[in-house]
Image 1 (cartoon, rainbow, N blue to C red):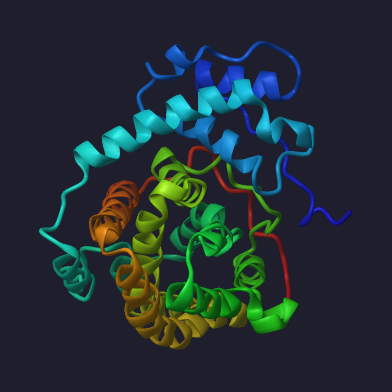
Image 2 (image 1 turned 30 degrees about the vertical axis):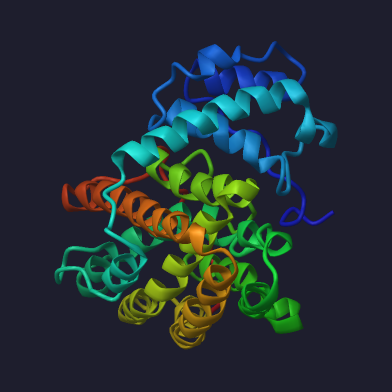
Length: 337
């Protein structure tokens, strides 16, 4: 089997909780008690990695972990406690808008010039920072659209049709070579990175793990389907302007044709997706279930909150001249653009 298609190897632990979960997955030790899982800092590396390990079993899994672990009831109890704590701090710490209209309107307001990661990378980012950004975001983009697909059986009518239409584009419109995750892998190759799935899990910061864990949390729970739609709306509505800046950053630094193409593709595609999401997915959902408006709003607000946390971490490190990664990147892998 191709190394890009089988599961990655388990990463090193980041504390006692992720160590215990990892050892149990390998059959080398007992699971932590759910009560112990509830004591870990929900924003910290240890809890976020432990939750990521649990969620990854629903994607490609890990090379040394049996498929039967995915629905183990004892592991699910540990995961449930981690989710409970994560969701609790999200609800407590996320700044909220007064309603869905306000939340959607805020997405159309561009950050103060220079205040966002894409502004920074466009104006002054160096190639090493673009490489780090791609390594961090690979946890998201190499599974792009997968968590959102879980909501399809939980929608109907206009919302399901609109969601499926956008997902069809994300999955390449029927062409394997156009799947967005594969386009991102090509971007990574242009940047001299290893594009194997899960390659940079150990390097990614806790803030990045939280961004990806949010998608899985919302996607795996039917009761959070409104929040998942909100997350999806946030991604599609904010993507086009940020992608335009990132495409320019790739051109300015000579990153390569595939690196430019990934973001150029999103500028055009996501401008169309925005309208479908607003009018068909959100509009269709709330026409059937108007009581979910607050959940859609929460999904938008929580997504913005976690992306803001990640941006603050990246910019603080880069402006201080230090790496944002937990482990350094290997030298560029040579390639032909």
